Image (tube, rainbow, N blue to C red; front, side, top):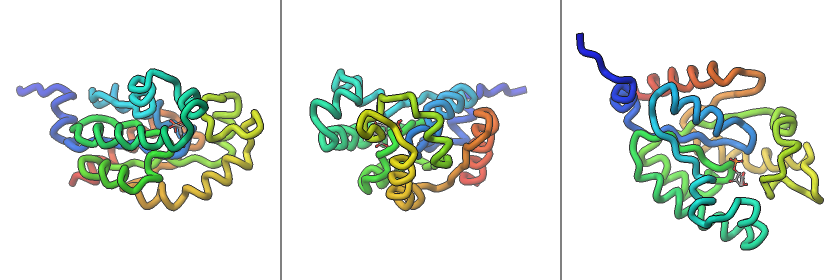
Length: 187
Ligand code: S3P
């Protein structure tokens, strides 16, 4: 009997990158890491990549250099990671707002959009001040989440090959659904 490792199976069945997109707090990192384990694939987190490259936290980058600098660094990082193969790419929530980023990621990747209701996102992030985009007058408020989600909805939708609702669901269930969808997309 020929025994093929799961890593090799993944490579054959999922030669493309798996690109996880979606608003902050939709579970991209958690799901990405779970998929990496299940499929024995490596993952790249674009936010971590930026933090390593600049040697600062995202919060400090925003504070010291502003959003434009962050977005142009993010664009360079996306160009780099788009050349990779058979990786899980966990994107920051603003990545798909830039059309060049979407074009690059689509070259080698299947783009999965993780979705969640504004209240779910708010509940998950209300104590977390590491995302400057969401903090208004020192607070994270539901209205800000709702407004930003609405503003970005079309960009998220048009960039994605498939989308998955995450509210109230277990990580394992979501990952299994993504794996099933990837096989469908391939065949
Ligand atoms: C951002 C999302 C963050 C991070 C930065 C900006 C956004 O990533 O890239 O704070 O504009 O949506 P996560 O979605 O991983 O939190």
